[in-house]
Length: 351
Image (cartoon, rainbow, N blue to C red):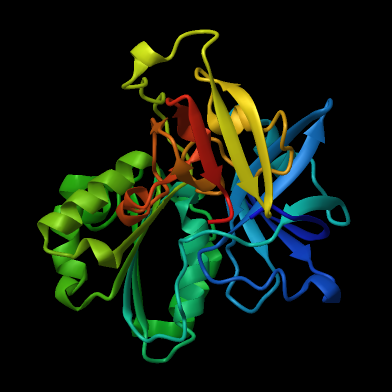
């Protein structure tokens, strides 16, 4: 489906740390239903700078049923995040897409939840924890890694959640650059620490859902350790905020020659467009020249916004941190990470 943007007014900017803020939006009555969100979902923001369109996706950090709010940490040199952290003020209007994402929790279902986050990965976890704890039969254990106390986002809100829900919310701060009274809570939240920490803090056999969010290294370590400890993969849900590695090279590099094209057909919102596209550019980048309505956000293989199904031909997807294995088996790809390989290709965004 195409990404639909709506102008929302910034209601409040709340400083969290020296380099992060929470941005809350007012939603008019006629858009309220469109902006109802499930805990864990994200908002994509859009702005145009010097004639160039920029989009960024930020997780919602508010409980389900409330007005949408996002947490933003400034990325060094990040044009979008720096603008939100230092320049945007209440009353400004920003183009915002409707909530989206597959990283979603269901507060209506009682369960035991384990949340593992680092840095700005706390933003969807705050929404998930606050929402599921509204069910009196649910519990949450949260392991949250940061460098030091001053870098902890939403510290007061997490403390308030702990005070409100008591033993149903077990919160563990792990700090890598600041000593803590308990040695196990001092250091990086890496694989070794998780191996020691999880069996002590969590009855893993009784866990219904595990939620992971943060840098690639944390998510990879946590998934590996959870598998070692016998947690079924289907219980583990993860989301990445960024990937600090270059994309891999094409396995079919011999087929990608400058000037060689494929006839690519794009299906979106019931409309079909066919055009020659270079094999050394991604499907998304090439197709945007003829279809400006294509959905996308991060272009890094992380968010899954540009997901589409290959219904004809062959493509090569070089990076995937958003699609589940069963989606890949069904021929879904991330068009921002996929290159045409065969003479003709058809991708369906409506599938």
